[in-house]
Image (cartoon, rainbow, N blue to C red; front, top):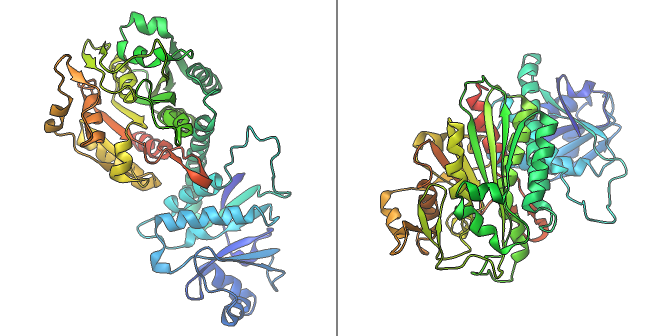
Length: 496
């Protein structure tokens, strides 16, 4: 779907459909009032008859209204005006686009950017609407033999801004919104692949495709090279699988040659059975989503490459498959990480932090400005924060706040958890430098504490996306979190 921005009166738009809002109870938005005046009170009469209250999610399609140029006018219920916040605004756009896709209106001009959203200006409203609109049509049906598609799908969406002076800012917002949505879609596509397809080697192949398409550099390490580097923690995780592990670094060089890169590191466990500490059978199919951190790295690089940001970014993916086998690592094993630190394995289902330990040590070679890792790391994060926010931790509060702010801006929210030294005590081992788990209490925090032991030489933040990386049930599928958060963070670092 193409997205554009323009300005102008709704009654003068030569389009298949003009979209305007109605607030509860029966209050017209500014653009709706313009339509009402041009049609001699047509909309007011409809509302007085009770045809529409303005409740959120209501739609009323009107045809052949007098004295105006659009073929159709779609009235959209928005609820109470004072309740129109970020999430309601995005939800309204998403439902609107899904509704339009089934009406036969192949194009539409939407007057939502004129609406008052608490604390938000034109740029945010256009960008958020662009993201929501583009993602509303996302489908993953690669493996379906028969796909039902609309006969006349929505192909073109235009957002109208109040003034011509808003057009430049609006176009920037459309460009960013589309780039973010494309990045999210790319991440979702990768994460939604079945685990018999999306193996570590497949991820390396996708890295080659992405870097070739966008002119980035690529380094891929196989198990022999990782063994030479002493990545004992990383390699242990993949021992039980016939699918060998891979470590890959994609280098986007949009900034000055001597500028330090921002490094993103993603957990890429292509399938997580739990290993010898095997998981329960229920919902184990969803463990194909244990590589959503890696998918987030791919999607973010895709977004910033489209935007051609003037910064340097390295995307690192630590990919392995965690299965039980005669060669699999065991509880009680002691591993030596690339850093030289030793790790007593208490639970083989705490494997993500092991691949990340070696990856986070390895990225020192890039002399990073900052390092941000993202991972479906702990079920404890779902218990703590549910499906509403990612867990944020790090060794630099400013960096964590910047990520939190970027999440608030894009709707991919994060909540900071403490990394106090007292929590480190839970990782003490009688036999090694540390254990790979710290017990049930504060499980998300102690996982962050574990990672912090491999990030002492640079500014680092950790994003635990276990509760937000995918949805279950009827809406089962990857979300693409935290592509928008990270893309916004990098846009701001680039001066946007």
